[in-house]
Image 1 (spheres, rainbow, N blue to C red):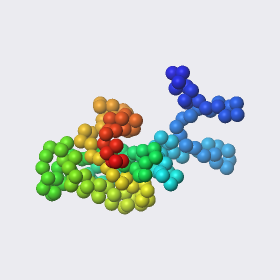
Image 2: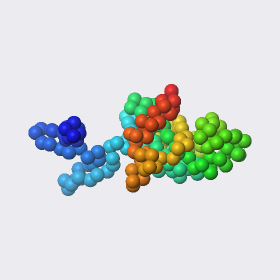
Image 3: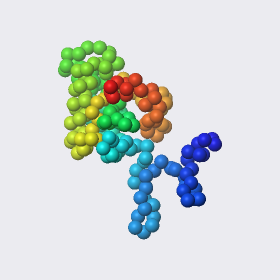
Image 4: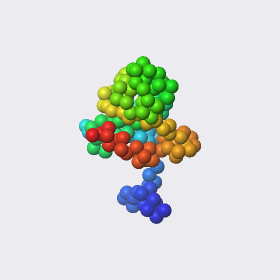
Length: 176
């Protein structure tokens, strides 16, 4: 608790400030306006910021995607995406591609992953995402994230640190 308090409070010029994790701006009339969340931003190699939730909103519109999570590695060249795909859509795609296997196997088949990546990239472009915002690589995760497996909050929001920890092997492969 003591360590958490030290992390959450900041002292500048003798004044204490509480870190909420929000990004704000001071308006001309002197009021504070909250404009974003700090932890949902990733800074790219050229100093550009990517709002991960904006990218996830575009990815969600893809027919193959049930639940996306966009991730940017510190010092990484590009963002990547972990995607829990829609099982029926993946099975239909596999049949089209003449690929066999159970759902978990299909999520690892290169032909399936490539086709989903192509569809996701097209959807991101359709949603007018800038090139540096679009995930360059993605992994399909066959186990859906739920509050029961502790990957989502009760309000169905991503628990990013837990998802990243559970899927660090897949993330490392995406960046290799």
